[in-house]
Amino acid sequence: MKGKRSKQYRKLMQQYGIHFGFREPYQVLLDAEIIKDAARFSMDLTKGLERTLHGKIKPMLTQCSMRHLYTAEPRVPQVVGEAKTYERRRCNHHTLDEPLSTIDCLQSVVDPKNSRTNKHRYVVASQDSQVRASMRRITGVPMIYINRSVMIMEPMAGVTEDALKREEKGKFRAGLKSRRGTGSVLKRKREEDPANVDEGNLDHSSDDVAGISHSAGAKVAPSKKRSRGPKGPNPLSVKKAKRLEDMRSTSNTIKDAAGHEEQLPVRSPNQAVASVPEVKRKRRRKHKSRPEGNPSGQAQTRTVAST
Image (cartoon, rainbow, N blue to C red; front, side, top):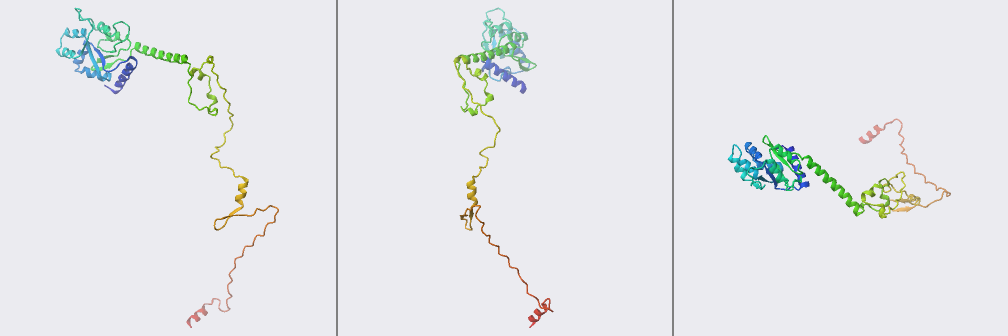
């Protein structure tokens, strides 16, 4: 079985389980023809049904289908022996001289009261197209057949899909009626800070969803309008401005060589400015004057060194 088809079958059985209560082991009603075709294709019918339905199964065979296998021409003993291993479903037609047709027998088992419902949650596995067509008129009946040694599950019938839609609509309406009947107010988890309330989100339609009725006398508190202007910088990230007194105090303090701070005398602008001490000039080096006739003075030094 391909992965895509297997995934579709698994989802389909999940839908049957959610809406119609199908559960493992699934009760599978077999007819005589699908047992013959499985033997002709050398298929393991039980394992093939388990792979298709994605779960354990309980194969069942009606008394009429068993009589069809006994009277079949040519009679195959292996098919009859395999059919005996399946669970027998009593259709109460054994008292008749001739067995009923497959359509009538399965119809009486799946829907005995003609209520168009699959009360006992049967899965029908049949090779007869007429049987499958009659089962499509009953709500919630999965159908399986074999096509060229490949087991196929039919998609959900139109009657079953309509029943699902009606069920969903009924649940939706029941939920709305229960909300209106209780009259409970659904409160949102929000802080009671008027600054956090957005003016654009205040809509009268929310009162209807929450079940608030004006006839009950519920009063809505008037909301405070918040003035919206240009946004300024973040006050936590802005450097704080220094005070004038702090700036004066820091400008009048100096540090000496030891690192101690000293306070300078504060003077008024009317006071005379003290004389600034002159900077000591750097002394310039003076060269000695050389004697005449010996500009370089090298010869004199040599004679002194020789003596």
